[in-house]
Image 1: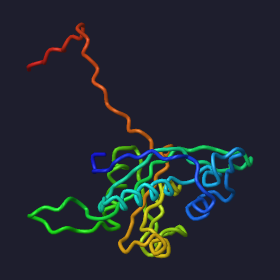
Image 2: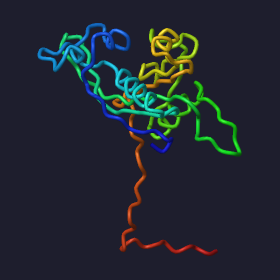
Image 3: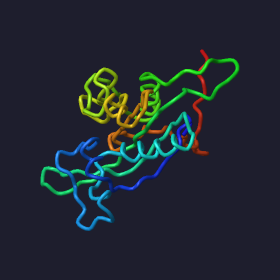
Length: 206
């Protein structure tokens, strides 16, 4: 929020097409009694909801956007039972900041999104590294996997050109995601009040 992002809340149910494109689970978690055919599967990524909200806002005249969502994602674990994890994911599009007479407008880029991830990580007891590996729905040359001690905890990058074309977009859309359960909270130092019975030892003068 301090970086100018607006929080959104989306449904946990998504369509088969959305899960096929953005899903991170090898086997989709299907709902037995879906509300509709467009909500047949439990999301394994927060990106479909963020992109749908972004497109809705864009169609209503909101050019520059910074959105994030904190929510549950679902997948099948090793025992083939559905498991649930909590993620924070975000989307950035348009100008870095509102137009100002002193500055020329600048479009967001990969390093703006990377800076957000680094700012978030600095608030936790976690050291992150970036490796230029890509997901299928991200641009192969503008994306990274995020690691903590060789463990994958998130991803970051520009939306794939093929998806941009299908959405009718000409500017890059940047996405990021972090597994909240891997972000350890820093230990805070607490002040302990001095005991009133504490006696200060006198200095010895020779």
